[in-house]
Image (tube, rainbow, N blue to C red; front, side):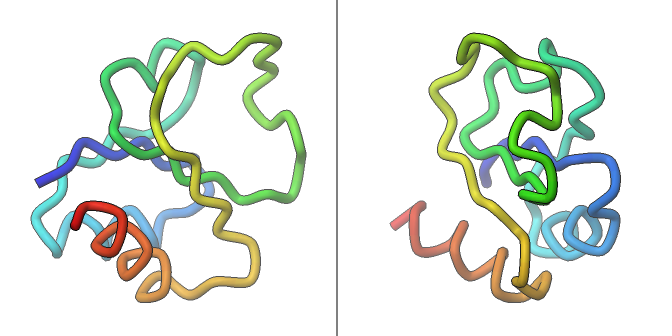
Length: 80
């Protein structure tokens, strides 16, 4: 399964992804995104982690307006 960084505030999404068997890492600082295949962010703040430069090649999923199941589905679709 995938290593996925998820913003701290998205606990329901973290739980749903763990239930699907993914390795979930809380995104607290820039270094947490290292080696992640996906990063899930709330989208509420356009620069939530204070990043100036991209430090990861991970796909970013904006969770704003999506349920935990919809985020899981996006991950599954991108893994195929």
